[in-house]
Length: 238
View 1 (tube, rainbow, N blue to C red):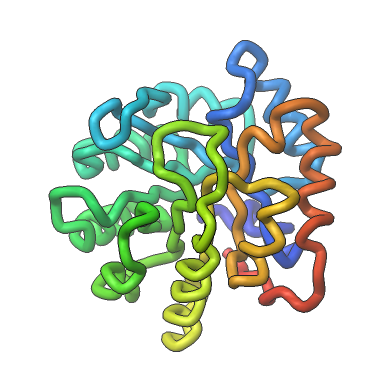
View 2: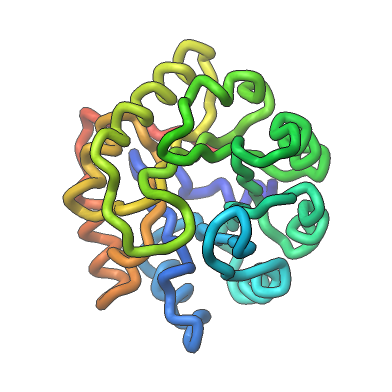
């Protein structure tokens, strides 16, 4: 990873990662500029294929276009049935990180290894009904664990109560390994739910509607302020 992108990623105890799924694609560049102005360092790209989840979103072509207009860290969350088929294409598009799902039919650990072989950071995500323990075989290769706090597929859903327990379990697992793995959470993140996720041990909050509906900069500031508590876990540096 370009060391320039590391600068500022740990300015805040909890990183805010805007999900471009909720951005206005008729003025995507402008929305990205607002995110940059708000001091965010990460952009989250939701990639859906209409099979693994019931929605179709973006692919490598759009990821490449986004890379042309920003130097921010790009994390691609592949909610697709056969992620291994598209790893090289996303690597070529300029993303910095690829996250796949543990629930794919292929051996997810082998796919994680392939992501690493491409020189990218690698993450694994789990659906709300999947136990955290299933990711243990991949721990030594992971840079990020993504806890879905909604069923993946659509933005604007409500945070599933009890998701904090899964975040807490993931944090305990990582801490026992003395690992620097990022604990991220995605789904229903608002100024009301973000503090609980942060207290449970999340250090990256992926948020969509709460950021892109209205004043982007003010929304990010409000979300950041909601988790600006010195009692939360320390940041994990990229």
